[in-house]
Image 1 (tube, rainbow, N blue to C red):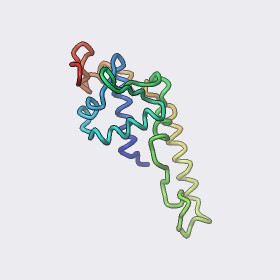
Image 2 (tube, rainbow, N blue to C red):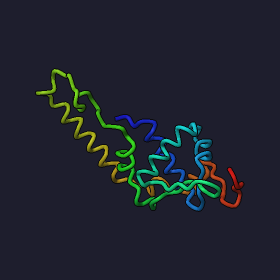
Image 3 (cartoon, rainbow, N blue to C red):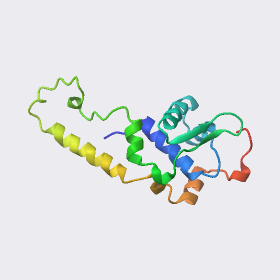
Image 4 (cartoon, rainbow, N blue to C red):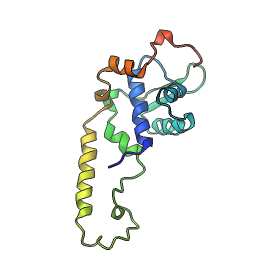
Length: 152
């Protein structure tokens, strides 16, 4: 199983926002911290907003924050929403040309493995990922709210 960079970055955004709940965070801040292009990150953030994980406010004093409590954001749900598909092998798709498709049992094995993978992620919430918030804030070098310069 391979998670796309899109999903990886979405999870990073959520972790960052979960570690910084006392204030709104700008796309620029997250982009700079993770070294992700702002335009690419905007596409990801827009999807997170559309899917109800993040709340975004434009303008002065605007920014991003979690739209739900960290306990209500399941990693499995995020992965399912962010991933474009779960075609592990060709026969998962509708246009499979594999000669083995009609009698192959490998597709079922892969399907069960994918279900187990996603079920495992369903047992993890954003709250589980940010449980050591002070350590996470140090690793991410999150600036305390009283040290944030307006306009950045």
